[in-house]
Length: 84
Image 1 (cartoon, helix red, strand yellow):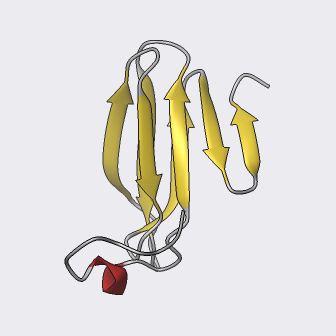
Image 2 (cartoon, one colour):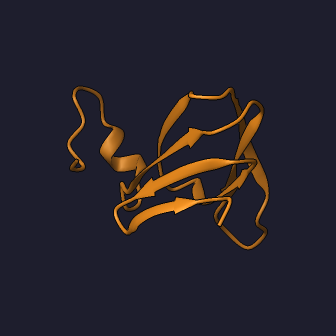
């Protein structure tokens, strides 16, 4: 994937454009977005059911993501299994 967006001016609001994918291996997996800046804070939370997939992107507002529960996380650096 690249940083190209269809329509709008979304490119101006992304920092790196790196995407990641979280696939829930159980009910109730929580994905929490953390803010950039001097104080790191939670700014967005998603709850996934077993088998659900979340595709997300790092932006000017999101610098880190916390995953709670059994899930597979795919990034350009590889796949992480939260159970390992």
